[in-house]
Length: 285
Image 1 (cartoon, rainbow, N blue to C red):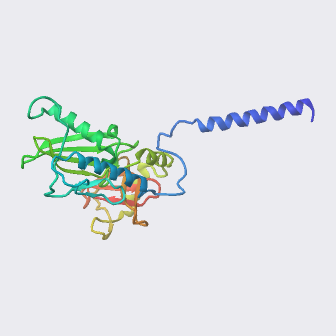
Image 2: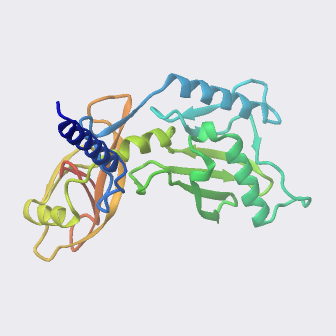
Image 3: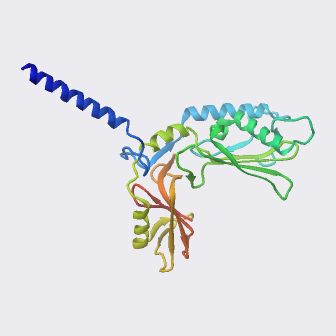
């Protein structure tokens, strides 16, 4: 090989390496995440290590009780995620939020700080990083109890479906009446998988599809529904969301769909979710 040819080969190799490096450093697409959808929808399955952490959290919660004769609280857990579903009604144990402030009854600001500390202590049982939870509602119920409702916001896009919620019901003397969480554990790992997806259908593509073909979905009662929009029906495309529901193929898993949220007017349903990758109707409400 001549010196000139050798120089040419070296320059070509350098150019190829530079091109490859630029490809890995491309900014995210404005249309959404990119990557391979070879295994889609993304699944979250039961995890033995998560169950161990939840069992430890339940034990700590029992130790917080002022009148418990057992080392385990009476509680129900969510299937698959293992987060707490509910405290047993009329249980003999009583759990309390941490005391904040010197007065007998906490102020609203002290109550929120008490809730924050409780969530931080029992985040394994709740199933969420406290930093990814947002208090969306703090109300006093007609029966005298108090409610704190939180939304989990761990992903680039908001969660839809019956997941990503935390509710704490308690009294003015800090006693916890009930605790329920549909939060998604291991959300960081899920975000990695979700971030590798590529949006294949734009919002306008989905709108045209729904106008032409309508919606085909399974309702909350398990009935198959084929819905044609009336002529007066309007479709208002929203943003991308992560719609979560029990897996259709695995009993021990949840499905995560990247979907377009559509607002509907003059139609039998108000909201529809259409998969941004497959084009299937994930759900309608």
